[in-house]
Amino acid sequence: MNFKDLATQLTRLYERLNRAQKIIIIATLITVIGFVVFLVLYTSSSKSSNYAVLFDHLSSKDAALVVQELEKEGVPYKIPKDGVIEVPRTMVYKVRIDVASQGIPKESHVGFELFDVQQFGSTDFDQKVKFLRALEGELSRTIQSLQPIESASVHLALPQESVFVSKTTPPSASVVVKTKEEMKLSRKQIAGIKNIVAAAVANLTPENVKIVNEYGEPLNEPGLDGIDVELAKLQIEYKNRYELAYERKIVNILAPFIGSKERVVAKVAIDFDFAQRNSVEERYDPENVVRSEQSLEEKREGVLSEQTGGVPGAVSNIGPVQGIEPASKRQKYQKSTTTTNYEVSKTVSNIKGPFASIRRITAAVVVDGKYKPSKEGGMDYVPRTQKELEKIASLVKQAIGFDAQRGDEVSVSNFKFEAVARQMEPNVYKSTLSTFYSYIEPIVPLLKYLLLAVVLFIFYKKVIVPFSKRMMEIPIEEKAEGETVLSLEEEEHESLTEKFTEMRKKVEQQLGLTEEFSEDELKYDILLEKVKEMAEDRTEEFAALINALIRDESELEQSASAKTKKESS
Image (cartoon, rainbow, N blue to C red; front, side):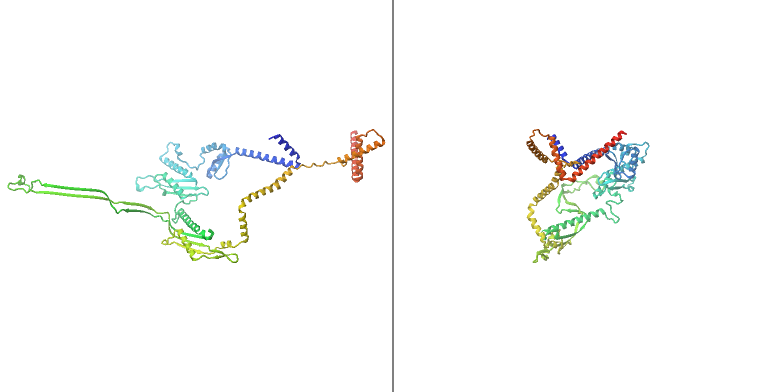
């Protein structure tokens, strides 16, 4: 690309513009350059004076102390919103350390850093108080780190230990939380906070942890009438969700042959039992299984040994008496014992009831009728027959899982839907338009591009072309002031010259002169002839011109004489 030729063309284009066009172009360039310079300077200045957050979520007391300290040190600051203080980015860390060394903010939570510095002579009571403060501060920090929580405060009640178990008091805790805007805690989050606090304190149960919000309202706790508000809301949402699902199911089943979803209305009411029942079931198997078997068998045979017996005395000590023969006794003994242990099989089942069980379902369904063309050209409404309504009721029962023993009810009615009836009325213009649209529908995408091309062409012809012509048009030179009245056109000058040349030749030939006329004299004669013609044609203008010349000449003579007198004096 030849920049020299480009610069030459731009210069020529600029020279061809008139004064107004030049002023507009120069003013536009100056405005654009000034705007760019302003943006650069503003961006650099904003970067150089960029502020960063020093502290946020400050209480009013701590914010006042921080501002007082910053004003004392002469540090510039900004307060974009309540509880937030900003300082220049380059000074954030230094100012934060300086302010923290003064013990500010004072209302922030302290943790186990309390034990970093040991004080000489501290008692056991002081250590217990420090431990309680540190534990509360750590729990507050932990809860405050959760996403929905803006600020939190924990208070623990730890009873003194006792050697008597009957006099032992369980610990308790209270938590005050402030949630962020447009956020709230769910039941699971509340239970999680309770478990966090209970797990951090020995012998503390989640039931002894109470949570309230910034308005003093208990969270996930029964109200004055003993009703758990959060649980009641959950039950209502559960009921509404199931009813809406049943209604959609009914509409989706009936819409295809009724005509459309706008021609079916279904409302379902479900009676839920939210009482949860947990049961334990034991089952014994009647078929016994042998677990162990034990058998015992005894057998004895032979004669009993002779034994000396009798009344204590001399005879028994001497032994058997002669002449008396002992009787011989024979013995046979047999014993058998069998023990069988059977195993009784048992099944133990812990059954937990569902969150809710359905007691009863009632459904009310309203369907539109039929429409047939009439002789007059309109649409006549035809109600549905009883047989059709019975079929619709059968479909509805199957869709909701109808159970007669449970007491379910289904009601199906047929009514005329006025809004649908008005839409069914014939519209000649609408039908014609729809017919026309059906013809041009295949070429609609092409028409879009064609319309865009037409708009661009009109814009080019009406805006771009006139503007370019106006920018490129040659400026008309302004007529010089005081244009001479006595001016000869080039063609007239040439014709007169030729005429007088011919006249001169004729005079020379007739008079026999050989000496040529002077060119200046010839021009003078031509001009004099032109003046005579103008004096005859434009007598008034010529007289005015002579008067103006005489007046100018007299003024010049007067001024010259006045100047001469002044110099002589």
